[in-house]
Length: 269
Image (tube, rainbow, N blue to C red):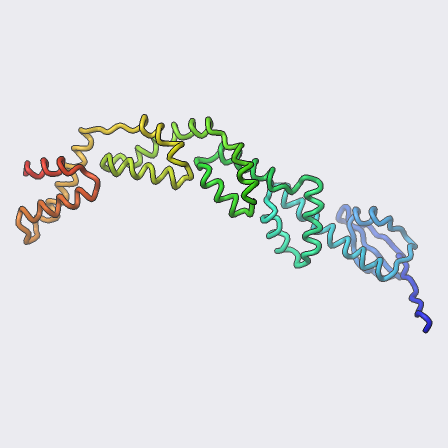
């Protein structure tokens, strides 16, 4: 059986668009599709060139890849991205998983997509610009899809001397925010706040112990104010004085005041 001969198509015209770097291709006298300058040059296209259907399909795929690659470059131009972030962005643009992997492979080859480098840069930036400790930084990197080994490698960029300076400035501010709390509760809330920010007790315990000092006069004033409010609250109740004092003692103790201080204040009533 003789194989049917298929006549090649002719690239009859290459027309520059008004948009720089874009060209319209005319095949057999009719507009077919547009390509970037990169595709035009890489495929050595010229007027009068013969093109098979397979070659035309390859050009279309090359153009799709070129567009996707350019969009990836634009996305990366604003800041470093993790592979997961870029992958998510490209999947919002294209459903061609083969081309997406091809784009990422080319970016890796040019060191434009590198989770190890991204993690190190992210750690340095967070240390210099935020009030977050490494536990938060680690969680953020995990959320961005960074592998654990890259996170551990990036931990080397976690500057502990810088963090100590940061904590020496941060801790007094946090202590001040809880100034109207009893000492026991205040120290507890400060620790909880620092842990929530990603710092470990090993990082802040020594600094906290030197920054925190109780003020007996202020503590006594807080207790007196709280006791007065509670006494006024129960003044209209049917409770006896002893029952009122018991409820007030229980409430103030839960608020963090020392039991002996509460008892002494109640005895003064």
